[in-house]
Image 1 (cartoon, rainbow, N blue to C red):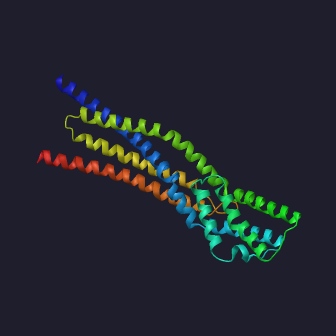
Image 2: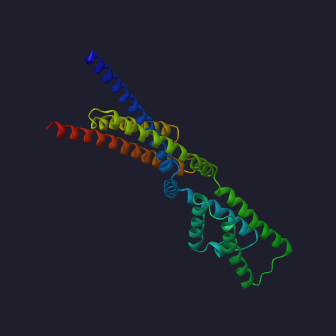
Image 3: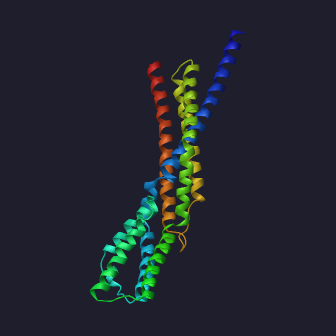
Length: 278
């Protein structure tokens, strides 16, 4: 009778062990998934690096320069008055990085346009004693206004704008998920230690759960990548396909760190068991 009772208790404990292991696996998966979005999908550094490595800035500058030269030609101002050296390109790239990647203060880019374009043109007109007519003045003002509007539209790429919107929404909600998942993970780990006859066995179930969660996370990251990559087109910056590759690499790294942690726990259990039975 006692043997039967002991067997039932042993069986129930192992069932609870496995249930707690699954809770650890699922909560670990949620933690890894949150880390994937926090440090990969919505990583400012990864997005910045991907856009910088693409030809996005160069293509945008070519559009900017073409439009500027058309406007300058319309009022008879030589192109080299504004774009005679590398300074304009460097300024444009710097401002573009701020506007696209760091949400600079409203109006900063427009003020820069007037400083880099209007002032040199005005100086050239004065040096050459050229007085614009009222119609030309209106055209010049319209040129600057149109250039500002068009540039703002070019720089506010819909995919990048959407990325910022989704990032803000994620950051407003992810802390709740982290707290709940971390609580479930911690409580399950504590219970595993409390119910073990030999406490070192808790390392085995914790390690197995963490490895399972890491493998689930790896599968999720790959699944998301298969539907995330974007081909570069005229409407879509090549940075987005680069960005997807970088997100995949960061996501896999996070998952592998989790699997590695699980393996470490299994090794710890083996070492403790060997030490106790030696």
